[in-house]
Length: 312
Image (cartoon, rainbow, N blue to C red; front, side, top):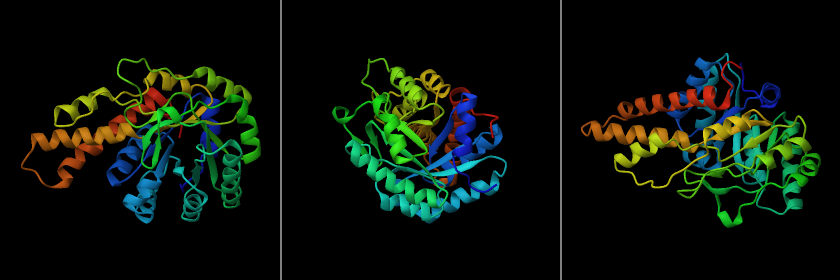
């Protein structure tokens, strides 16, 4: 099976009351851990690449890693998606370079400018059969080149979504309902709560249209504890409760982005392994359990949070 777009994935997810996992990839072990879990659980998957990942690993290397995953996992649909494309040039480069889906993130711009930038990307992408995700509303937090303060974040305004989708022609829409980027999503002592009223109003105004959640890592506390136990310093790292993500997946949310959790799983494993084996120096020795950690985390997300296992 070749790389696919998200169109069919999202149609099935919307009708089936589940969401597709969108996992950010940066290296071979992460790609392997994600896709091996999806293959075994027979789940569709979106492999995401950010601008930062392309700068780190190189576009060509990332493309070839994903192509290898397609060869190794021929029975599951895999889409290759640009996460948070900052401008037309970046989106065009990915479209021309083999991506099947791109996100143009002009959410920090005024409404009319966001529409104009998004429409330009849509017109180019659709000529090549590539689908486009856009964003309306602004998430707080830090992820690669995305850095938005809490003061500058804003919930999506449901009264704007229909006009935005109609005028841009985008294929899916990321909305802001209280998620945020990074591992520090909420202040210690607060009770995380997504704005389901905003989500359901958007859903009502865009019947049948796929909604996307960014910044939806749950920041597993077992990984945070391991990192801190073995020399890390991550006090107060708090994520989105998984039961809220599962509730979102039963609605119009067809794609849930998971990034920080993978990084936490890998870092926790490496820190623990190096502390317990101080004489080891071969990267294969500590990256193998890190890959296994990612695989088990992804399996859990597929089954218990996204509900997309068995849907490939």
